[in-house]
Image 1 (cartoon, rainbow, N blue to C red):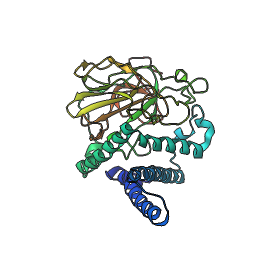
Image 2: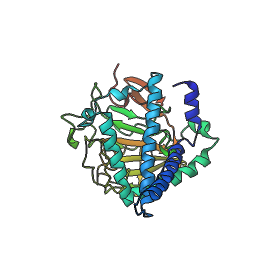
Image 3: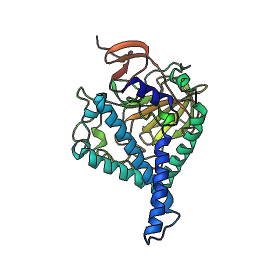
Image 4: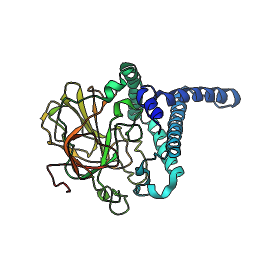
Length: 344
């Protein structure tokens, strides 16, 4: 990716809107064509289904375009060659895409997930206007609290970083600097066996810890694990996209978001005070996800739907065996706290 491309992607707070606009145009034209040239009795309830179908296809098209651009400049991330669990490594890109898109489309019929998507869409519109002209300021934000990694042991950063090619979801502004953490072996395999059972996954059931001192302001603890591990299938029946999760206020304007934990594993309630390193719950497979992992990000407000994602540096950690007092972390590296054994 050229410097110009990186600057264009990093300075625009409205890029996430492009698929929405394309979807709106395509859906409108499609509706006109269907009502004018077919005998289908169009119902108003069809509008949202048509629109979101076009939206998911537009998102996929933009993502494919970005991946092709990365290929052309040889910047495709090594994670694309990491082994995939279950059937994901055998299906091929086309079939995986079909499964992923179909499962997302099915989620439109789930009123819980549908309403959350709407809240996020409208929330991000407000966020885009709020941060316009302040993107560079946010990019260089210095956190107030002292953050440690939210676990013990060595974990792989599957997604996450402070550039578009490493980011979890660069154009989703509340998750721009989010991380997905998993545990893998030295070949980047994240499970034993075939990967069709949750117990196969190395990170499943591991303790998740508070990244800093703080106060719990939200707890969701009753979402079952998804039933489709190993198939690249999003659970369209879940009531909560983030699954079981906590939001912890670590400092004024700094809220930690910990997601996809195991049902009933969170021993905390709203108002509880926590210390850095305190047990929060167990890593799971709840919500909209294709593989067990911990999703963690820092945001500037208490609401997931209207907050801006913030970059942060973790303290007293090792990155691929090298110790750092304070550092950002990036996709594709193995990280752990230095209170544990560190490679020489």
